[in-house]
Image 1 (tube, rainbow, N blue to C red):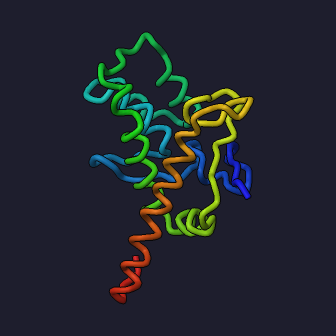
Image 2 (image 1 turned 90 degrees about the horizontal axis):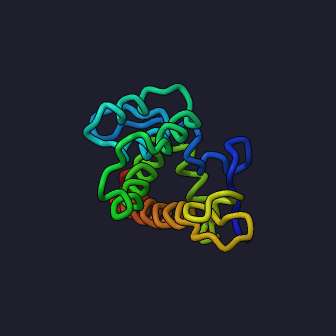
Length: 156
């Protein structure tokens, strides 16, 4: 059974980058993974801090998409790893949502975004679903670390 998510109000809403599961990364606190991801488009500029400090993930997304801001040159090459970095930290930080992610077993996870054909599946299902793929990678990584810790008699 494929697991679909999109809105933070749904059963698997914690998988959304808009879910309010903040974390510390790169020495700063980020209210959501969306804040972190969008700010990284402008790392090393005042725009990054402006995005980090906005109230909602929706505002962070809007600001990150404003092409009046100077998008970093290597964005297309680094965006997947930046997303992966944020998702890993989010699920390492919050045990409750880590357990939800691990409880999905080996099911396919799909961001059911009708408008995003890169991070989600798009309106017709033909999108790349990169966020879903990253969530499945992180799930596998967490499962491995979790079982290794259990084997050592430690719990993380």
